[in-house]
Length: 152
Image (tube, rainbow, N blue to C red; front, side, top):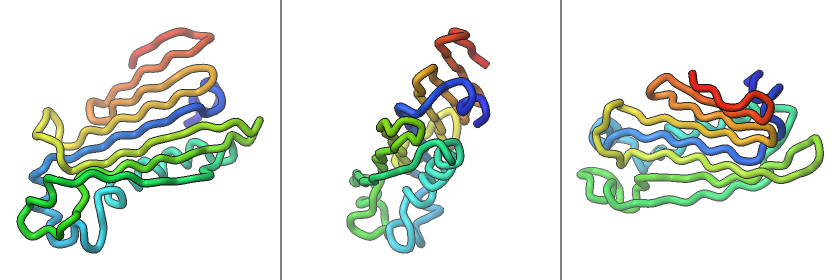
């Protein structure tokens, strides 16, 4: 948070992606698509993280949601229309100069089995640089106008 706030400049774009494999629906069949959805279960963490980073610097001004379905509809016991993947599209306003920014937060439980149970990626683009985080593989990289590229 401190590096983003001090070195990368005002927000231009942020995206977060988190997925879990299809078989995870077996675990959540009792409530998936009924009492909650994949966005609340996974996306809430992305939104909280980003809002924490931007606190006092920018605010969300408009939100829309988009969903896909297909796999969950065919899963035994899940209600018709249960979403596989949900993306929140959010417009942000920077306080320092009133400029616009936008973000997407995508969560899915329609992924194939992979090298990790949950893919988790974040990308933050500011006016002075960018930050890419691969939380599933515990790595990140950044590029800054002043300092260039660095992988960690």
